[in-house]
Amino acid sequence: MITVMKFGGTSVGSAEALTRSAKIIADGEGGKAVVISAMSGVTNQLLWFLDTEGACANDVIAGLMKKHTDAAKEVLNGKQLKNFMTDFEKRIESLRHLIDDKNARNDPFFRDNISSQGERLSSVLMAHVLMSMNVESVAMTAEEAGISAVGAPGLGSANLSKTSDGLMMSVKPLIMRGVVPVITGFYGCNEEGKPLTFGRGGSDYSAAVVANGLDADCLEIWTDVDGFMSADPRVVPEAIKIDEMNFGEAAELAYLGAKVLHPRTIEPVRMKHIPVKVRNSFKPQSQGTLIHHLKKKKNELLRSVAMKADLSIITVSSSEIAYRPRMVARIIEKISDAGVIL
Ligand code: ASP
Ligand code: MG
Image: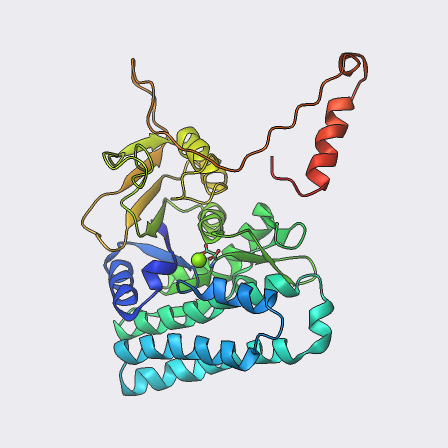
C-alpha cells in the first residue's frame, strides 16, 4: 500500500507545525511519499523580491536562512542540526548562484525558478526532521523525482505518463525500501529541464500527479482546515464539515472558489480512482473529508456552496455564428491564447 501525503505551507510553517506533521508521517502505515509546500510566507517573499525594484537579494536570502534555521534549531540537536545545515547550505548556495547570474534573468522561466525555491528549502528541513525521528527519509527536488511539466511559464501542467515513468524509476524503489521521499511540490521540469510552476497553491496538484504516477492507494492532503465545509465559514459561521463527497463535487467546488484544494487536484486522481482525504494537520484526530466515487442518495440535492468573486462574463452574439463553422472554436482559442482562465 502506498499513500501520498501532502503538507501545505502552514503545516510546515513553524517548528511545532513541522514536528506535528512529521509525527503524522511517522505514524502513517505502509509505503509513503511526501509532497511538500514552502514554509508559509516564503513563496510570497520570493514573489515580492521578483516584483520589487531595488529589493535586496542578500536580505531576502538572510530572511529565508533565518526562518528555516530557527525552526531547525528548535527541532534538531547537535549532529542532526549539523547534517541539516550541510544540505541546506547547498540549496541556499544554488539560490545565491541563480540570483547572481545576470543571464538567468532573461530566461522566461526565471520567475518559476525563483518562486519555486521555497519548496527546495522546506523539503530538506522536513527530511531532516523525519530522520531525527528515526524515519529514513530523503529530500528530492521535482527534477530528481522526475515530475515532468509542459506549458507556458507560470501555467504548467504535468505530463502524466512521463512523470509516472520518472517516479517509477526514482521514487518507487525508495518507497519499496521503506525510505520516505520528501518531494518538492508546486512545479515540474519542462523538456529543457527548466522549472515550470503549476500556479499558486499548486502543491496539491503536484501531490495528485505523484499519486497518479505511483498508482497510489490514497492521497492525503494535510492542511490547516478541517476539510470541505458546507459553505465558507468566514461568510457562514454555521457551516459544517462534509464527511464525504464524490470527485465531481470536489472538483467543481475547488474550481468555483472553495480554497481548500487547488482546482486541478482532482483530475489526476479521479482517472485512477484514488481516494483523497483532506485533513487538518493541527487536529490529526479529526477525520476530515473523504473524496471518492460516491453515489448521490435519493433526495440529496446540495452538498456545499462556493463562491467566486471578480468574474467577468463575455457575451458574444451574432446571428452569423450558427452559419460559420468553427467560429466559436476560434473565439475560445483566442481567449485562451490571451491567458484568460476559462
Ligand atoms: N508554495 C506555493 C504557493 O504558495 C505552492 C503551494 O503552497 O501549494 O503558492
Ligand atoms: Mg504555499
